[in-house]
Length: 328
Ligand code: AVI
Figure (cartoon, rainbow, N blue to C red):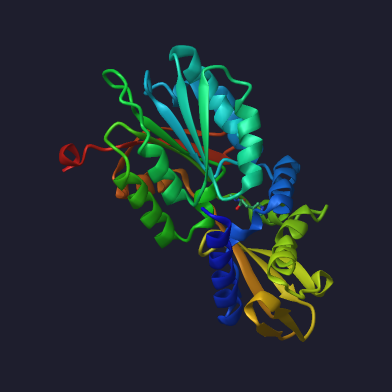
């Protein structure tokens, strides 16, 4: 994706989001250089167990997770973060096969750089980076799938870190269907999904006492100031995280502390805020383990196996693309 293409979309989304009611901004735009580093810091926080729980599962079961894949296989990671988790899966696979193609897909240049650096430690890994949205990156990666002998040439897609949780249910279902459509029978999807837990723990994970998540959330406004000539006063907005039990999601907002007007220079737009009015910046859905399996099955996958972290915090599910004729 070219810089101008990205900027056009950023401008269009910010313009539409700030003029709608209720106001909203897409979490996709959290991840500039500052936001990516703040997210890495969140992952280290004691109140955000998600990353550690998933990592423990990959450390313990990584070999089983890649067991169905052999020579010619390649791994595509959608939303690659730092590449540490991908390395935990690539390492056992590399022991069995002469060469592993890895495709990193992310909209964040910082995340791609971090991942490339992490993977350079592994021998026999050939990494390609795609600065792209998920669907586009997956299309680029699968177009380069290697033919491989026998059962080889399979693609294992990683969608980890509960990134699926940042999509509304309809968007998640459509995303999984699109993903299935670009895969072949025998290809896999390793899906990380955070599980429902007590409300107090969830709120603490998204409103940490150090204020790192608040900084991550407010950086979205700082980014609009930096890149689109915005005049947001960051001190005039509060970070808020609330658990919506009915919808099984954490909702993150930026709440205006007062009645105020903000200009977004690049859009020639003036936006009025009432005191207490919020911008909805992210939803983070939480799942029950069987809900993850059903979501995969509805999209044309079958569950090969699911691993649950011992304290019930997190799930990792290996879904295999079904042969549609056989599935009927
Ligand atoms: C990337 N994503 C899965 C994170 C989440 O938990 O929803 C983003 C995040 N937002 C606040 N803290 C972390």
